[in-house]
Length: 406
Ligand SMILES: Cc1ncc(COP(=O)(O)O)c(C=O)c1O
Image 1: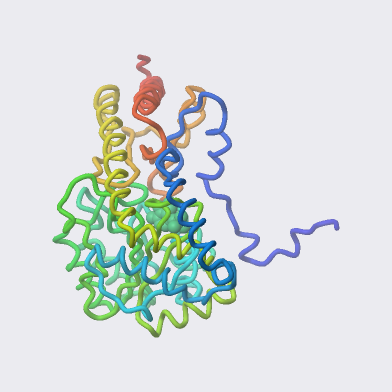
Image 2: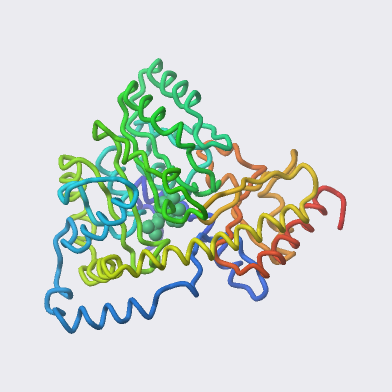
């Protein structure tokens, strides 16, 4: 066929590969240190426990677990999701949960069911690149709200909501990653949480709360990561959860929690996408939760990521030139680093690749391309020694861009 691309739909034509995926190839080259991916530490995957659970479950009832399952999720999947939410003080019934193939599918389903072209989605600026892609495909109007060290700024949110109202635009929801945000590592301060809900009520929009990192706090108290969903008194918050960062991303297991009316719609959309989530994986996750293993495992993960974050922060302090700033996360996977003006993280990337270190450029995560001076550097995947070496290489690159070789 001559020009097969003439057959593409509007969405098909506008599809763009993720910046992060593109960097994967570079990261695979020998001796490259990658701070680009958001991949969990592979040595911490509980392969042994997963294998044992699969073996036992398939021996007990393979005929059921290898069959199609309910599109909403199996009773065990719903129980596992309920267990993780109850740790955060979220109490919902089974009919308020839809099991998904990862958190990303949850974002897709919500967008498909709620968004018409031109609808406004409010979001942190910067935000998760995977969500940005989904929202752009749906041709939503993206409105980024600035953050400070305490997370999304309520006064700026209110101003943006008011401006949209004045222009007669329809705000469908605020997309927010409340805990250890991707890409900044920042969390919404506890005092701001009721305030955000109050603004959502005042301007009558929904909140899509994406919380894959909430369990990965380095220190207590747990109260600091209490999700908006736990404070939601008028069913305004749709909660998206995931097992990717606490069991493994390869199992593709997540969920949505919302009112039964919306869950019913989400379920209908999901039936047409991919029928159901693998019942065996849901049973395995439930077994890891109910045996008490997952609780201990999460404790170990917190220690691993806290150590790596500390190593990265110490290396940054040691080697970065004056004028470079960075966030100081208390959990999760990411640090957000900002170069002094007029340096551009995009223009610097080829130089960093020469030094064999890679990161994600800030603008990949920005709805309005206002983050050219920033980058996301992940501490989740590399060990402490490699992190130190990678930050030394990054500092060398920045020094040379600033005209001061070190
Ligand atoms: C904020 C955020 N939401 C959702 C996801 C998607 O996770 P999942 O593997 O559950 O689809 C990620 C993955 O990195 C993420 O960082």
